[in-house]
Length: 181
Image (cartoon, rainbow, N blue to C red; front, side):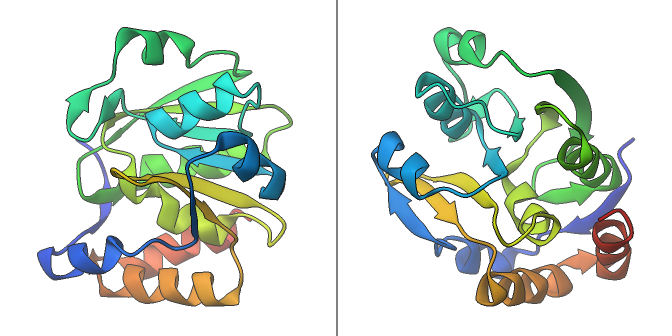
């Protein structure tokens, strides 16, 4: 069973629909504005970055998009990473294993694919606190495109606010983020 640290309450779901950065429909334009390291959250985002010949430093996938299985061509194209880590992370949660895998991927010398059994959607929140200010986090905005997040002070403040209002042990999440940085 997964060690769930935080669970998203229903009343925060609407707040998460507002993008944390600019929305792009052109992958080349997104990449020209992206920083380093580059983190991709989601199968379709990872696929589009790989199709543009950019392997993210860290990518998180769950083989689903908008609650349906991704097409075979998408899952087959998600390759070329130096290492793959499998973790369990139930929908609407953040688990210890997910946070540890993200940190290990960011601290490694190569590229890391985190293959999530469950759901990776909320990973954009803690990873925005884990990466340096020069980094970019990219995640999908359903029916709109890809959101490019620059982890500046305003983004980090918003993320901390959301994480502290989730159900569970936000202090444990912050300890994992900060202790392993």
